[in-house]
Length: 483
Ligand code: URP
Ligand code: ZN
Ligand code: ZN
Ligand code: ZN
Image (cartoon, rainbow, N blue to C red; front, side, top):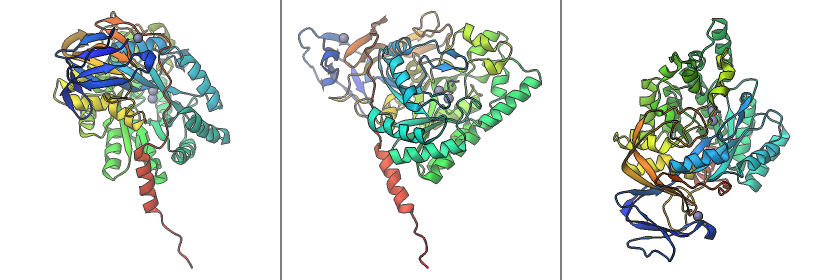
């Protein structure tokens, strides 16, 4: 059935205007068919009354980990439950991560994740992590880019003795990414320092979650961000820093950008609003439920992150959605380093960003669209199919009531986990309807997500900024002296 959204105000990255939006049915492509005044509803169309509401591009969460096998257990939201929860909050696409174990061929990990993701209710793409290096990794990166629509690779600078990439891996992989026109991304924390600090804290008798942030101080993140950025600068490749949580890392990004380097930054909804004092909660379960890396930080860092987002030094907002139930977190009851790392938010990101961003005057509604959708689509080469309200774009839309409120709670959320890091937060600005490729998946509190309806998003290499970097690299080339 076609869907007509009537009487709303369209907000995209650049414009705000009154228009009706007609969406083709998912069965006939699920694209936006028409945008204009007083559109006729085709016979049988579902009509959504959007009077007083906004019509925006569906959210893109460029950083999630559905059903991730990690630290001896598996994240409890799978590709179906996680994407369905996202739809209920206005998020219509995710970019998740294929994470090969050391020595696992990239292609075998990729096929494994593709299989798991078939149950997704919303569209999804993949970044692929480079966790080790040999000639087969070099070759598989090419296959992934040329045949499978993977155009970004992830590097964990933390998690020593597991998936950590050392400088040799980073340099090899960044050079290969440059060749392929694919964007290298990094989790920036100095894994050696984290490892040493963890050992030291345990030796001093720190076994609880309060030791988690002590083992991952801001400097550890700043060092790694700066190292990744400098490596990228020397090699002449753009780079994207995931989950920037510390002013130290942001400062490295700002310095590089102010010197003309092409660096992108991502910030998580949680890092913008949650304080590090959560780790000193006397209730072990609540403190452990907040264990994620990098950790939540102080107000000083949160202020810097908001300013970075406002100033355009940080480009995307994500969640790093990677949830574990209390029984899973309990694996680290005697040793904080064994608490599975990860928190949720795929359902709540849009409302948290609107409430704390738009309602506080930090972001305009158009800027909100940029940081929740359009920028991710452009950086990860999904634009304008995603991230735009435009004829021919996928009908991935959210109808947004800026006056509606809700109180976030584990009791009412759709995420498959027994905790919510935003518990008790009342937010003003709520998705009333979410449309995913022409299918109405969320309507006034009714979740109609369809298992398996999500499609894999192929993302071609060489977005425009990559060509710009190549031009700049060519102009910097010098010749040997002829003697
Ligand atoms: O603690 C986190 N963030 N868990 C998921 C893996 C990662 O580092 O992104
Ligand atoms: Zn990470
Ligand atoms: Zn992550
Ligand atoms: Zn449908």
